[in-house]
Length: 298
Image 1: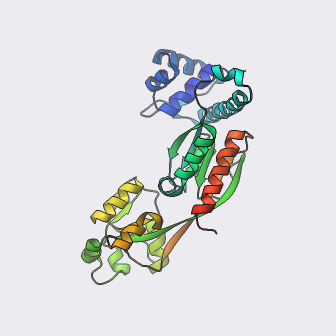
Image 2: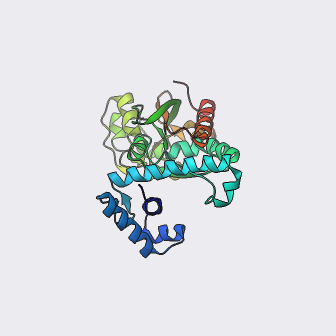
Image 3: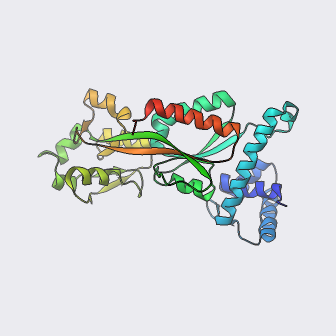
């Protein structure tokens, strides 16, 4: 039989990143959290957490955390169906999802707002590149994800959402400094790029499609969608940007497309656990409806 107070302690440490923060959330001491985690590890016969900054779940720990999240969803449904249990509920239901930053900045916020308004539930966002959000779902860290990976995660349902488009943009001053003779394979290798993180391959895909080159230009690293747009406007580098974020700056001449007829489309999918709960169904409906209105059909 699983020890749910101990499971809750493990999940809280993973979610909050430390024993101290988990203790504050659970209303107990850090020592009590440590004892619960250690006791569960002894009963399970496996290490559940890697201690560090932040603390992370091991493979076994991630599976148990996923179980805890699913139990919480099921409990929220029971409480919703039996109002007399409402006094025993530990606050609003929480749903943990992995979403890429560009989706948050362009269309997912509308889906999240609709879901929260309809259900009163809270969302715990894990920010991750769209090519790697499925990994968060696969590890059990989240129960649903917006992903560019169409390969079904075991135990999950997959729904096509549409595609998000990206265009290559830079400021007029940047164009003058680095592309005075025009944008070509040689100048692209010299002009600094703004990249979200080490796994961001959009610029490389764009350069390969446009000029057939393997891009090896200098890079600025900036893990923020809005920050990348601001730095592009400031002339720090060129970047791949969703048109919806760039269009007013393009219209005003503050940004210029490097190749107006070339864009990169990234197909997105919604993957969620097969757990049948009304709350997860409502989130899925909100995501799919909002995506249909905002993403390109593929």
